[in-house]
Length: 339
Image (cartoon, rainbow, N blue to C red; front, side, top):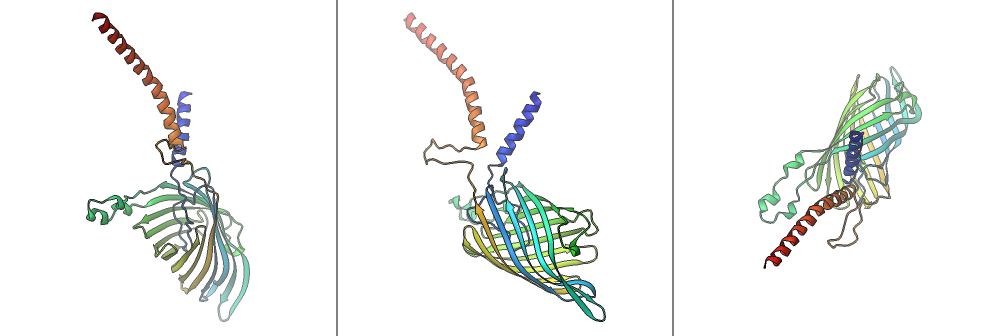
């Protein structure tokens, strides 16, 4: 019974400990306009919508193909319970042109969901970097590259592809999706995100993909990116090379645009997107600072735990302190009597 209580205590303690590593940022942190996903959560109390209006156009290949799509995709992100845990939903609704090319080319249009995926990610390792601004003794050390930046922050992703999609995208049943999300902040202005996914697991349409994205911040408002995504499928491989810009309108609103070159089997084409990312910010810090004096205390699970422990040990140590003071008092009284 005691072992069970001890294990439960350690579990609750670790959960509380992990919650103090806040993923929340003062300004919106959007994955758009890239296709990759950062390992970091939006933070508790944040409800974030990342939308994109896009046009995709490729050449018509023999037999069945989808040479053109006009649509809207949106990623919804939120976090609760734990700062490191994020719940998200990714949907894409579009109008597709279906083409057949033999002697003549015929086509028709269909509308519906291409993707409807619900998932979650958890940050299992967050890399910390040295603050070089505090190095005042050596210019060389202050300007030296921090080798910790070569080790990425890591998150794991697990999702479920629902079957609420257009007939041309159905795989026969719901299917899982798994991924590993990495991010290297190589400098204060440049970061690299790498994603690996195994999608539609257990179906005849299973695929493996990777995404490599580099993002550079030009100023407090503007940032740009370049990206390479490759999807390995059973019958063909699809690759796109993209670039784009993002503009921070205010701390809760971002506007972005992107363009891509597409190489889908033998077909080639382009992709253009225009998007908006917006968040509803209800985040509250896990502590409250009342002043800048030494009496300030942070109300976190760790500090509450330490207070309990210190009060417990203080009582034990108080017993020995009291006994020592009593012995010293008796010695002083004895010396006075002898004198």
